[in-house]
Length: 332
Image 1 (tube, rainbow, N blue to C red):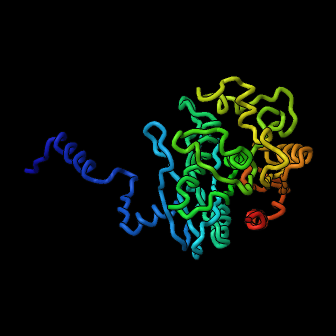
Image 2 (cartoon, rainbow, N blue to C red):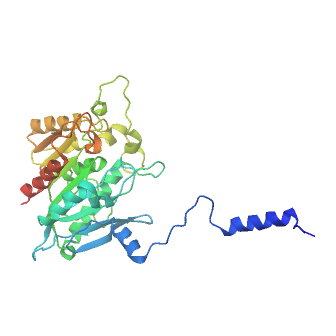
Image 3 (tube, one colour):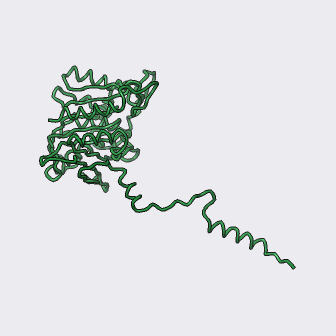
């Protein structure tokens, strides 16, 4: 006589099989080998042939260490080398210094290494909501990174009188601020505030120049345009909290003088995030003062050199070449 197991027994066996087996529709992911893990970790760093100092803490805020990386030219001589600081974009609230290792940025910085510059991408506090960090704090952190390099210049082999800077978008704004403000302005860490250095030249890729003139952000001149950067300018209790004072403090145009170091602004003519108006506005102010500001306008380019209604002209390769050559030409 044929006997059958109780239904509950069959159900329990089936459930046990499901539990012991991989989840339905889920593939087993093989563990990465140690070489694969090392490759993944190294991909965030700029691939270069020279010496490197990675994950260097330049200051600590609260319990957070702020870091930079330092890449050296392949065949430096015995003298101290000039350095290009890189300030990443991301709307002052996102992004990473590891962008230095990707895309056009890697092309720019590898060529600068070949030209004998050291390269220093820097992390800074991000102006996220409820972090008590504002745009001015981003500036201060980046200036403290320069102060650290200057103060440790003997150990690091950096020439503190040959400091250059480059950034994109929000980082382009930071680059302008670092270039145009004096070492004594916007101080942060008390242990670094007395460091002395000299800025030589800077390049801003699609970075804003003025926040007080809100219409510069209104790319199509529409009515009822509203300022969208107020919170990132005002949302910390450091420094003066008066709105107009804050807006002027973080506007690079207010630091232009006839003696300021040369600035190259490269801007897309169809950029709706940071309109080309900023480059023209900065150029007009510079000409009135006799300051050295050069602009390069990229046709059919939106933000991040995204093609809009045609091919980007000059090309991205030409943008890279012009950026590198500007630094080379300004080196003393």
